[in-house]
Image (cartoon, rainbow, N blue to C red):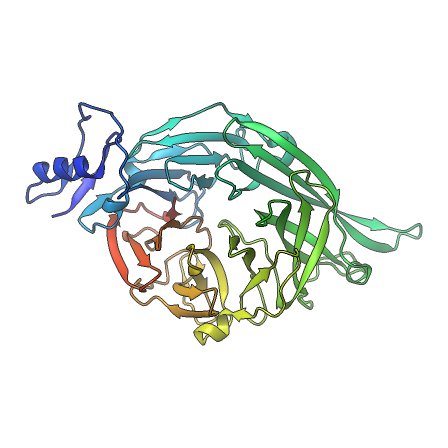
Length: 450
């Protein structure tokens, strides 16, 4: 007996269950009527789980047709008899392309900054009320004057108080003889008061690499995923390096990958930029759509990508430098080659779920995609989660969100254009629960839970 959820206001999980059971028959059940009461009664047992999906634009998997969200309780998310259709019945998040979503730590609030188009850079906040019901809260504010219409932003883990958005622009520099000298990278960073919809601080800086690296044509070409240290006095920003040929200033695609780098700023002033470099991991630290660095046990743990030796989890200690004695290589941990961490998130215990691909991943409709692993930051070990099915058309590159609820981590799994399910990983035992069915739409895909 499959229960299809279409529309409801906030109720406790108990009321939802009773209402659904009394309406059930041997056929699927739709909930179309409004409840008589909208009173919100909080329980300790269940929280909101918001599922997000990116609709197809012109091509399957591009996610450019808009972003849709739909919320259910955590009890329902674990229930395989529940079925939800975010693309048909969900709330449309304002965004020209795939929205960059964040949620409060308890799941009661969603935050969004529109990406691209006329409304790009506009911040909105919504109270989660179940189903497609997301009530606007507070006022809109635009960060477009600071970081453009397609900002890369993240909610800092400071009690849902602050968001940080970043950008980088580059310009080649030449001497008096028109000989290339370096590429200047100017970064912009803005912090946003999420509660009061106010700009806190904005700073721009020219961020340099070493003279030797710059003379060879290396420069910072993309930044993303800011995260606070435990002391709350430093902001770390992930960086991607690119390289050009100094003789021609043409892009160079065949070059030595340098040690992973992170930009460090004073916080909250956003002053005094510096760059730290890992001697353990090589490649980029900016991630893509999902948060790439997390605070755990006094240190920041950061994934890298495009590492010739396979993705690492890197560690930045309280001294604001990489701990090069900490070596956690996903290739070694999983016995694979070419691991690439697409998204990840740890629970408070240091157990983490990692979405990844590797050299043996099959090519699907949206490229070579991947798998999930359960990792332990303390033991530097990882095991593939076999209970979550693999499909070559399962698209993880745009994956954005994992919900951590105690020791449980909620994820979505559905190939592009096909139905799938929510899965809940108990990070303590490794047990995996197959939960609610996710009804997909043509060419579309799910981008996580919030």
